[in-house]
Image (cartoon, rainbow, N blue to C red; front, side):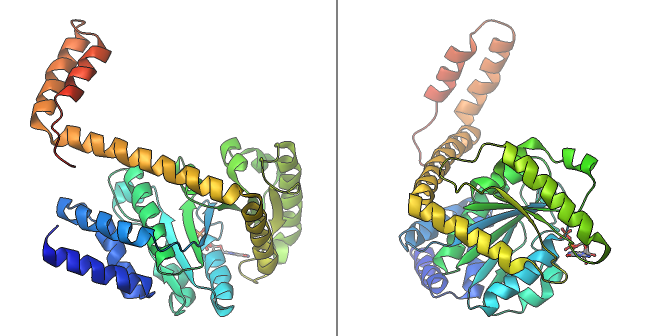
Length: 334
Ligand code: GDP
C-alpha cells in the first residue's frame, strides 16, 4: 500500500465510522473491486474498522420474485427509520452473477425508503460466482455495522444456494411467502424451512386474507414438526401473516424478531454463533487466498497442468501429485 492510499484508507475509515453514507458507498465499492491493488486497501480498511465493536441486528430475508420483498422491506424499513433506527438494505442476487445486473436492493424498488436519511440501500455486487458475492456482502455487512447501522437487512431470492449463504451471515432468517393452497405448501424446500426463524405469509389483505391465514396455520403446523433449534425459545420457528401493502402485522413481526434476538443474546447463542461465523470466514479467506496464489503462480500452474495429465493417465496418485504442486507455491504474500 502506498503512503497516499494508506492516508485515503484512514480518512475513509473515519468517515464510515461517522456514519457518512457517501463514504460507506465508496467503501463498499472499494471492497467489491476486483483490482489487486484495491484488495490491500480494502483489507486495511476492514481491519481498521473491525475494532469498532459495533453490532447490528442482521436479518436475512428471502422470498421468490413477486412475493412482496421490496414492498415489505420498504414498509418495514420506513417504520424502523421513523422509530429512529438506522437501517441498511443489502442484497445477494444469484442472477447478478450471470447477468452482471441486479434486481434486488434496487433503490427504484424502494423509493420511499431510499429517501429516508436513516436508510442505506445497496444492490447486489455482480461477480462471476456466488462465492464472490457472498464474500463481498459479508464485508459490506461489516462496513454497515461500523457505520453505526442498527439493522442490516440482507435480501435474497428463493433460489439455489443463496438462502443458505444469506442465512449463514445473518442473526435471524425470515422467509416471506405468498398465500397458497395445501399442495403448494409441499413445494417449499425442506432446506429453507429448516433455516427459517420466522415465516411471514404476505398479502394477508382483501380477498387473499383468509387464504393467507390458512397458509400461515399450515406452515405453523409444519414448523412444529421440525425440532426446535438448540438455544431457541419453545415457540420458534414461527409462522404469521402480514400485509406489506396495508402495513398490517409488521409491528408484530418486528416484535417477534426482537424477542428472538434478545433471547439469543441472553443465552449466549448470539455470541457463540457470531464467533463461529467469523472462524468460518477466516478459514474461507485462507482457502481463497491459497487458490488465488495457486492461480497466479506460473510454476505451480505449469506443474498443475503437467501433473493433472499424469494423474489422468494413472502415472501418479492424486494425493502425492497435489502435494508436489503445493510444494512449488512461492512464499509471496497474496
Ligand atoms: P418482490 O419481487 O418480492 O420484491 O415483490 P414486490 O414487492 O415487487 O411485489 C410484487 C407485487 O405484489 C406488487 O404488485 C406488489 O404491489 C404486490 N404486493 C406486495 N405486497 C403485497 C401485499 O401485502 N398485499 C397485496 N395484495 N399485494 C402485495
